[in-house]
Image 1 (cartoon, one colour):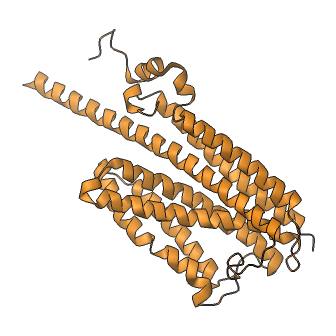
Image 2 (cartoon, rainbow over the protein chains, first blue to last red):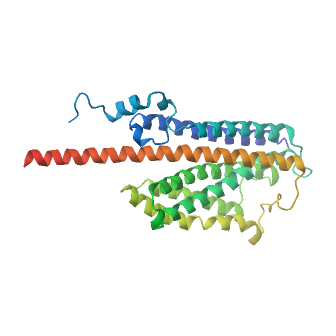
Image 3 (cartoon, each protein chain N blue to C red):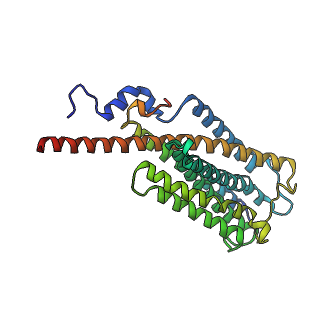
Length: 44
Length: 260
């Protein structure tokens, strides 16, 4: 049995899932930052 | 009514922050942390797919171990952090919405890692057992844990004030975290098809152990980075909610003044 397709799909889904989640979160952060004042972002 | 000189919330945010809006939840620390996590992930791919040796029994399939085990461990850690943060919120002396936001952010990232553990475990199961899924105790309890935390996130999305949300989700988180030891020890208590801990029993050679170590470190860095950013997004979302509520109250008061 060729195991490489299963291994590569595992890595692709892992990295892809993390990338999609991160991209969506940062996009949401940008849109939120445009609607709040700087005092609501004390970490900046 | 807003005067022409008064900036709208949108304009205030954009003008006050200037370039900072490009990185609305980032700080110097998180940028270094993110860079370290990216380097760690690159190392993980290098060691996991190229440098680590094949296993005597599992052959190349062992390479899935380096992402499957760290994602499962990080999901456990994330759910425990959710539980501890929820307890900190419920305890009167430490009650603060920041604990609630950390709990929510950690649970969300935990669901992501648990989903990865389930998918990679399923693919590994196809190689090792010849099937993607079997209803053994480890897989069943893990799926149950995953669904429980999806429910937790759904409960967080219900209406009410921030503190109502925090209270009900904190109680749920304290109940849900009790499932973590159940999942972890299920391989000892019920002896399922799923293998027991290979790491603790010293079944891995040095390079395999190092590859697993790289996976755990890089996933941990990534987890911290994701939770920091996510809880800041939640903080901004709460601020937007508060402003919306303040605006609605001001409009209502203005209406009452006009009518009286």
